[in-house]
Length: 276
Image 1 (cartoon, rainbow, N blue to C red):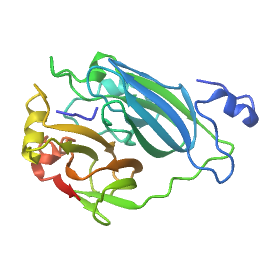
Image 2 (image 1 turned 90 degrees about the vertical axis):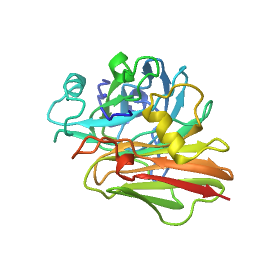
Image 3 (image 1 turned 120 degrees about the horizontal axis):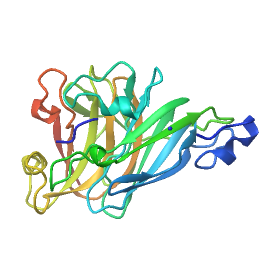
Image 4 (image 1 turned 180 degrees about the horizontal axis):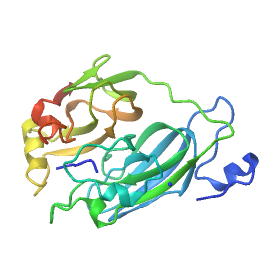
């Protein structure tokens, strides 16, 4: 199960771009771009990032699929506090699930943009290993980083589709079509949700995809990962860029439900989409 489980001192604002990851934008520019590599089992990324719209260009380089769930911590909390949260416990008030890139296609990148505010953050991978079922964060796949004030925050990218998350549904502003899209994802629900986008292999169904994941991802998968956004708290927005070709796609949310602990897909939060 995919369970959802930040320095560089700045002497003056003009020194900020020399201290943080990425090139800080000028007034009116787009988001700063941060390259992140997901390894077995670590993240290669900056320790400090400037605030504002930030595009995480995420590439998985391990033998297993990886994602990056970005957590904003409040009240002086640290990674140790995150690791102490019970696996099936509620999301504490001092933690905000900010989303982040879900696994992209093999040898490709997921471009996910988030508007970051100053503070302390942790990025983790909650995907379990097929060999032992242990979440990658339990194997050390986490990274703390700090978001510092920016001199010239950029602007969020323009989008052409909106995907709204509710309890328990995905709602598109218009049908998904072949080509490149930048999708705005808005969690309008009462609890956290995510978007796992999969492209089905020929002859397979949405139920095949869910069964493979729930069965521990053993053997050849009936799909390829195609991006999406990791778990987002209510009210959080992300954007992600995708290129789709004709075929069958599936959207899943595997965040455990606050009520019964079952993944949201078990409550009907899964959707098969035909792209012509």
